[in-house]
Image 1 (cartoon, rainbow, N blue to C red):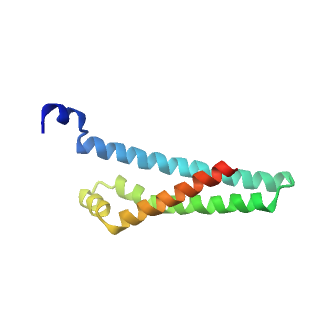
Image 2: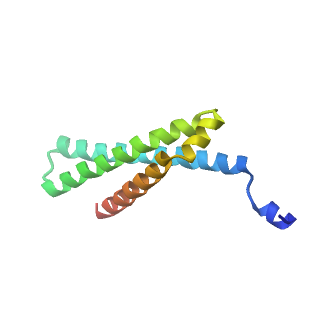
Image 3: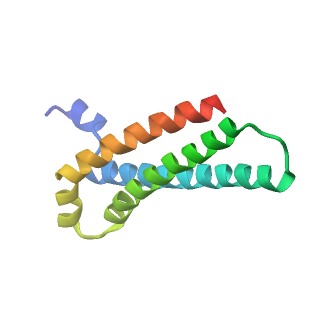
Length: 118
């Protein structure tokens, strides 16, 4: 590895810190989105405003997708916050990590599409 490549490549520690920060940020965004959806659902029921059943079904479905994403990311948050390096490495190399990545990607794509529709 030449000196120029070495300068541009982040260290393992930097990558781990960035990954941890991104995962925690995603967790916070999902929880914020969940609170936003719950507030809309509650606001509609409190205001007695006339809304379509399709709109309420969409909000309920979106809430379910966010819940699935939060459930999946909770595993990763717990793992990345652990001090046990062996635990982190075993998770990152496991089938669970692959499953999580696939599930999270699908859920986030659905959430993005549904949020755009509202």
